[in-house]
Image 1: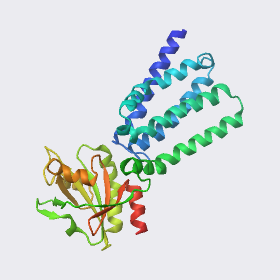
Image 2: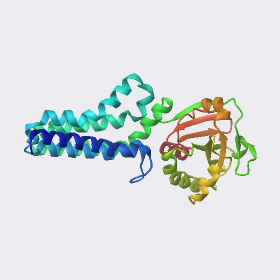
Image 3: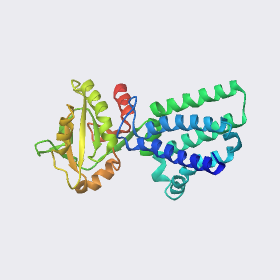
Image 4: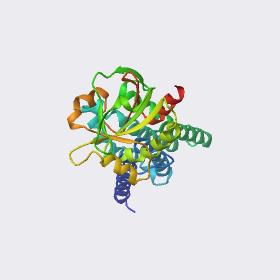
Length: 293
């Protein structure tokens, strides 16, 4: 294989790996209970670390180390440029790029310039340990911080607006009539892939608290042009879940949705009996919040 062919192969491989490891972001499938950005971080970081190590350790790779580094990082450049101009709106996905790029650079240095086996093993163990911890635990705190400026998700915000939702029969009900002390609300929409992946976890939480008089779990389907008041309930029942579903027309309640902070999906809120939001963030930490109650 000529030097040009080898380099073209590396470029093609880099593009394929980039596209493959970015695909999980959509949340259309899960692995070990995680999906979306956490899954992209987990799989992408491990794949990039191993791929870089194999390439720079090979006989041909030792002669093309600089090119390999540039070629593997190059697909990330467009995303990094977008972040420069739209930094605040892209923070939720920032760890995905950060972990992958750091994995590439660390692996490139360790396997490209260090021959000490103990150093290679030690660094690899640390990289894999952090890579496994963050998607399963750390990302929940990061996501909460981006959503509401708090790593724990705890907050205290009074909602002055009346919150009216529709049940599966189209009847309007006041949200306050659905619970006694605390209610966990799962806001979602039809086009949110991650929302569907979270439904099993919402179901588990519902089953856990369904006999608790003080804590209720409700799914709030956010309707758009093509949705009906019972669309969300039909979707949930067709998938075999039992948690209760109400709906709200997003476009008719934009001011309320902004007051609630519901601008992306899924969005999990916990409200108390005085119409205060006491938690906003991920479902993992929402469950912990309910446990602490």
